[in-house]
Image (tube, rainbow, N blue to C red; front, side, top):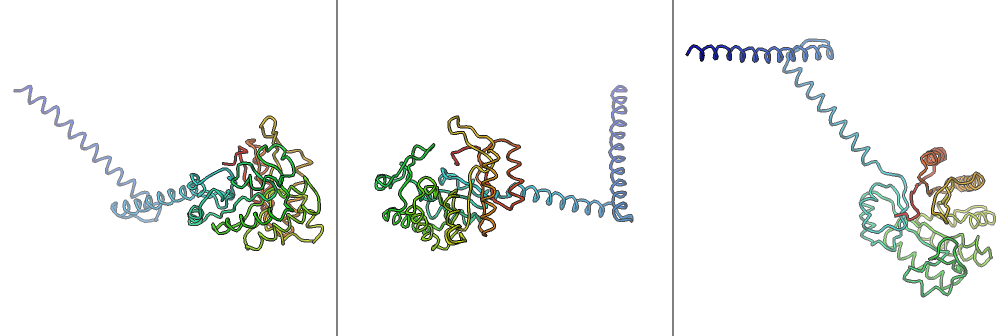
Length: 319
């Protein structure tokens, strides 16, 4: 019995000592809290008030941190080109302010959903060549006028042909009715391939018709045609509102399927061309293909300096 009592006496003081330690710790925290409050406000106050204010300040700080990270997380990219994407990518497109898609493979509802997210939608429209995977290929294949180097599924097309011009007019009308915000016109370079007056006039007729929709019209490439139009008429605002140029700073080795840095001669030529277009009052876009971090940084710095839009892709697929 005496052993049990001794054990009890041994245990109880330990518990009391532990409780005292907790009390001392609590009092210490109280004094620390009051000192923090005194340092912040320059006066002493009661511990409950100080704790409440500190909790409020901590809550505000946490909310600010969370919102800042959310804003960063949902910050949109300026520009993206996704010519081989389909409606399964709609969620991904929400991360872009402006996108280029091939709206022939999207519905009007798809485009409405993108608009609800605040995304501007331009559609790809190939006016200068015909592709063998299009539904209309067999109808107009006889209008092909030559092979398209590096793109086996395409052939240059006779843009001077009235049937082709009428077809492109109908197709652009269908795309317009889907609610697109503009047109991304490809292969005006047919004039570089075949620099005849009929080709020049054919491109001009097609572009001027598309301009009647009152939408954005971006010519991809086409520098030879655009320069000739400017030379003849002194301005380019009758045929375009923007220009997109591929491979200004980067280059493509089609034989090996690899990307490299563009030659200084070609780069300087296209930079001058784009800066001239900018002076004409059109929006300028660059589409580059590279994974080189140093080159990517150069592209970003140049576009920031010039106030140009840009998209850098790691693949020719543009999905």
